[in-house]
Image (cartoon, rainbow, N blue to C red; front, side, top):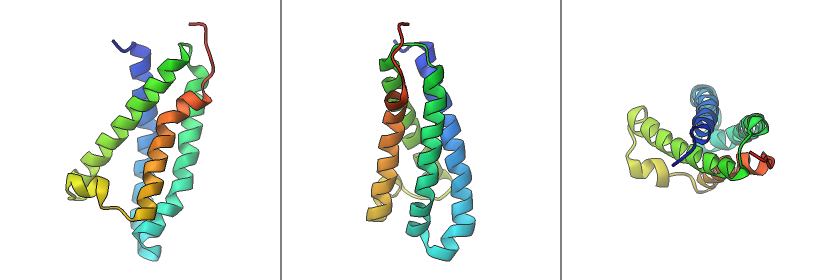
Length: 133
């Protein structure tokens, strides 16, 4: 069974990064996309999302007091939550199909998106430290 702190870490990590991503997405959609197109706008947003991912993972991981393996589990759980939330937003707000949410992306922007999801998953473990707890 997952420890409560592992689940709390995952949900907190997900919520903070997803909130930032949602805010960036609104700015991207309303201001940047009309000027440069959807794929370019997503590529412009990516480094900002990476910075948020690193900052939030670092802040949470440095406060973590459990086994380092919990950080790996928390990151993976948080990544699954992001994928589920992206699906919900894609279907609910953008009117896309599940297939379109995950597979009908620009090849470059889509690759960057999945790279960010991978970074999101591993960042807590990568930035965490060993603990005796």
